[in-house]
Image (cartoon, rainbow over all chains, first blue to last red; front, top):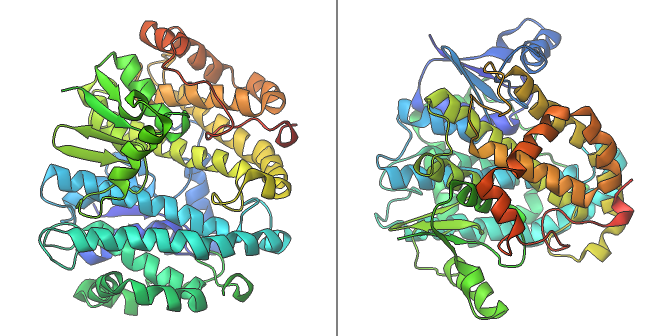
Length: 242
Length: 242
């Protein structure tokens, strides 16, 4: 039975780190909401789970994964569960703990990225919080992007194996999430990030190495990779960029 | 060798969910920053780790835990690591996955709580983002508190064992985090939350049950429990409350 991933069909969002892992691993999975016949059915197949008051272990929000009899929510938790089964976990326990630690730091960062365009409320339109979004984005560009980039580059610098990956000698799932961060920041803040990325050559080398992994390259060139757009986590509003 | 917890000595913050777990379990631990002789030394014992550019697996931020040769960061990751060793994990694998899922949802919520008073930037004073904080807090009170409360209460309602705990028949570590959320919301938003909490009797019953667990009760009455204050995640600014 293939893994069943439940995530919104129109955005990369918080689900993309899981799609990237499943694709890179080349395993069989169903992107459930994307296999429905209409946008309404796509939404409902997710909402029906979230609103099922009889489920004893319901997700707070998508993404969630169904594997046989188990349903798992929270992107980093899903990756923790999947990574060993699909060959994207470090081989040793300390490596696995560190991979999850990096993934949780990525999770925090993605929430910060989201709040650059929605600093006041998710329940309000962007247009009603533009001024606040400008202030938050300016701070995000100045302080948060460099802080996160420096952190990930330091991990790459200090990998004792001197490989191009974050942990050990092989690609593991947080590498894919760093790729996603670079792609997202290039989309959302092209002016600001084109300056910033020059200072983090190892991160860009990691991004480039991921982009040519055969399975990932195929995925990125396919229709399964939803283009960035202004509904996801990474959005491009020129007034928020430098 | 006792566990060594590294977290800021003057706040509960993101470290409190770990202190609560260590205290409830009654295990030997050192709260490293709190055992220093001055505030400066307390800060430095943490900063020295964060700024050590030679460490191959450095934390992005505190809290972090040292256990023998391993250093682990991210509160939920630390709890995942500790919970089995200290007797606060569910006994079965699906229960453990669900406990971590709840903890990650709590993690998201705590980040949202923090951003009620810092919606623009952590690097700016509260006083310089009060107007934005008022807007964010109003939305947080109206939409986010009820959404999270309804989610946790639904888990309690649907626990097949009909116990008072979130998972199975015994207290597990996310129960302690729900206690912390209730205490924090009562401190930060006393007017708003006194209305809200009436609708979630099972959550309040869980909070009450935690408060009288012998080890936790002793901790809460001790000087080890840092009082809430306006430097942590939960802060009380009357202008942000109802």
